[in-house]
Amino acid sequence: MKFLVLALGLALAGTAAADIPAPMRFSAARGGNFGAPVAADEYFYLFTGSTITVWQRGANGTLVLAGDTRTAPLPNGITSLQRQGDYLYASFGRYSASGVAVFSIAERTHPLLLNTFDYSDNPYRGPLQILVVGTELYLFDRETGLYSSSLSNPAQLQFSPLGMRQWVDERFDIDGDRLYNSGMTNNAVLGAWDIADPRAPVSLGFANFPCCDLMGMRMRGNYAYSFGKVFSVLDVSLPSSPAVVAQLPAAGWGGFFSALLPHHAWSVQTDTINVIDIANPLQPQFRGSHAFSAPLLEMVERVGDSVFIAERSNRLRRLAADQPESPSVTSESWLPASAAPWAVAVRGERVLVIEREGIGVLDRASLDRQGFQQIVSNGYAQGGIDMAVDGDRAYVMHQAAGFSVIDISNPDQIETLGTWSGPMNALAARNGVVYASYTDGSQSPYHFLSAIDMNNPAAPVVRARIPLSPASRMAVRGNRLFVVPRSGIIGEEIKLVDISNPAALVPIGTYTGCGVVDVAADKRGNLAFLACIDKLDIVDFSDPAHPVLLHSRPASSPVSAVALRGNRLYFFQDGKLVELDVSNPAQPEWISERDTAGISHFHVGSDARLYSLAAGINVDALDQLFQDGLEP
Image (cartoon, rainbow, N blue to C red; front, side):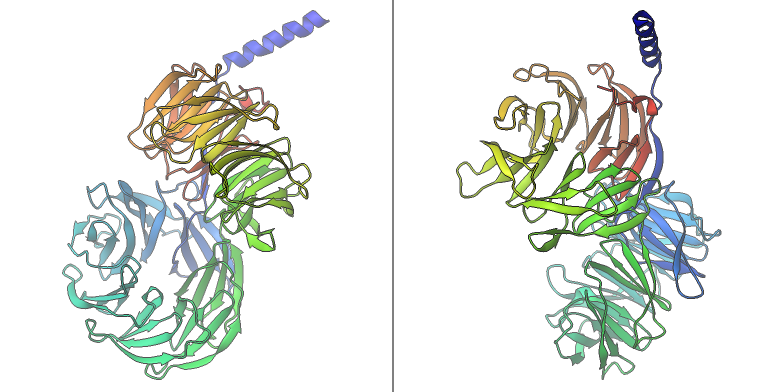
């Protein structure tokens, strides 16, 4: 019988060897930074990351997600959105990977990408905002100036420079034939242009003055309304000499998020909406404060009779603007995925996302947001900037200092089990031991690597500590810990530490000549793939004291992230997610690639999906051939 079993095993091994994993298949892009919505009929369009979401308003004011562009994302994050007729226009990207996209919304719930258009051959571009000005589309680029395209053929754009560049980068508004710019870059600045002829804007002047918080300014007619520690009304009929004509006492304002309604203004704070009657701009009247909880406030925008309030927790609420003195929420929803993910982990049918303010909980299949949970550490609610998962525990590194131990056995109801305090740079975990790169200013040298036993989170024990330069990332493979240096400078060493005995950490190897920013390795830590600032290096660490470079792939820009699954390597380079077959690591073979926004981090999920943190979360399906976990 044992010979039959052996023969069958060999046959299966031969079959597996003959099979070739299929290339990655893009599934969806969801989440990312969001911005001001636009409306068409009963639909609202709000961008998140590199995609557009469609929200339908019901008769009772509720919002329902009715569509999105998750399967056709733009190549980079959207920065601004405008609508004209049956078309949406979206500025996107940064540097050479930027432009303006045109979508048809003839079918309201299915924005259809028609084309993308460049507007400059300058590689240093930064599209800030777009605005529809009559029959023209304005594009403001923070690096290269103002551009305009006729909308006479709304699906075909052709931009030409208008030469204007004297502005601050915060906000543009249009009122009638005037274009206003306000903000706080270098100083408090208010500028205006006559745009009666959109192809020939005429400057009406700039003013620098200390009276107001111009980051929170709204414009209407000849008046500007400044929301900050003091509510101010300015007469801007002569933009070069604006004059404060009214103010309300400073008590209770404190923020610059705002909405301008027909005869009222709302000053929105994290716990209050202050209502001001501005029917007579020269005599504004305070109408009261209304309790409102938005601790992670990020956006307040009015569209018609709706005021949208969004938070960094991805909570989106609609308030009715037709009852200005009684603000009321008519709808509460979750924007998809995460606005700013730092790390992810797959747990059953959930994806946990580490964010600056807490942990987002997503449905694994759709990346729909299911909830948000803050982490309470040392009596304070905190978020995270990195995470290491070990069994049913997640170790979440905080931005301020230290890390928390989180029980994630039930991802819908996480529980904090313990904390560790102290300034940290990076962490990794295995078998209940956390390996922490941290700085201790009271010691010399200042930088250390510690092995902290967290099997009893209420009573952590430092098992070992050795001097080691600060890390930006770390990865455990087998009994080896790869330590990526924080500097990312060419010539800086990536270090290899033996952690077979957590009580006796032993540095066993280094590799120089590569400004490392990320690392992936096989399960035993013998073969490492190094994402460097100017190349991808494949290094044999079988003899860690004498690493051998097997292959180097040059790059014109930093390789910012790398991941390994089986004999497939995934990395981000020059605006593309690239897949290589590394069965022969000395001669890797190209398999596939696709355009994508800049990727900061990968996670290979237990669900055979590659999660890329890029202007939100992108997902690629991977071949199931390696699902048995027997890959190298």
